[in-house]
Amino acid sequence: MPAPATWSDWSPLNFLPPLTDRTLAELLDGGQAFRWNRQTDGSYLGVWSDCIAQIRRDETGLTHWRSPAPLTKRVAASLPIYFGQHAAFDALLDALPWRSDAHLALCLKTFPGLRILRQPFGETLLGFLCSATKQIVQIKQMMELLATRHGASLGTIPADGTTAAKIIHRLPAWSELAAVPETQLRECLLGFRARYIHDTAQFLAAHPGWLEETEQLPYAEAKERLCSLPGVGEKVADCVLLFGAGKMEAFPVDVWILKTLETRYGLNGWKPAQVAQFGRSHFGTAAGLAQQFLFAYERTAKKANIPS
Image (cartoon, rainbow, N blue to C red; front, side, top):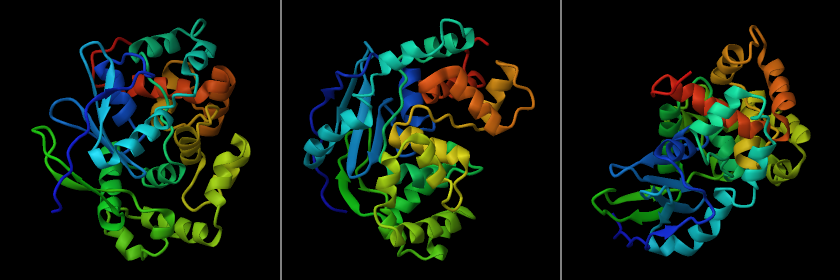
């Protein structure tokens, strides 16, 4: 194993509001991203693009970060983008109908400071192509195997009593995945998803610039293009656009959202497309932000002491 670098000093993320343990856990390990892992001291170690960072909160809720020293400048430049510094979340939250929607108001109160991450678009597509019929822990395992077996090394993080020294790999780019046989993708526990990823990689290799163009398109047009990819339905497309392109009008509908819209809003028997249309109509231009609060509350309410 190469000699590990040293960690940089801890620095505050001053643009983030104070966060509770529950909110930080939901933000980093609640299904938006799949390469953050909680450490024994309560901090989180995460990887995106060519960045590695460790995140922790202090007793006041202020969030701090550090990275392997050779990556510090790169990570410092990426963190404001990744955590959506310029997304005006206060204004987006204020525009949501929490004044007339008691359940939404409860969700916002339960997860103060929750926001939408702005992840690399191609990585977000890869993560949610892995997500079909899988839980978060399984998606994380698939992503880790893809990175370890097919992604370049970003270096060795040092041991500090919390994290053991180990080599960290970035995820493979789509151009790199295009050269990986489907049989090797299946060895990353992808199952039938290996075909989707293989075929998508081949399409993207034949259409250079397609992902970058799609990320910049208006929501409806971008969604239509994504849904033309193998294995991408409306839910996956909405997740990619919300968490990878900052399209706040995207309203992903999974089993948790179907449940909460049925039990809290009376939409019994509604199909996912109808629920998504209701979400965009009822919650407005920041429907995707509302969705994340609804999702977090419904999922957490089953395992935590949160009132219904």
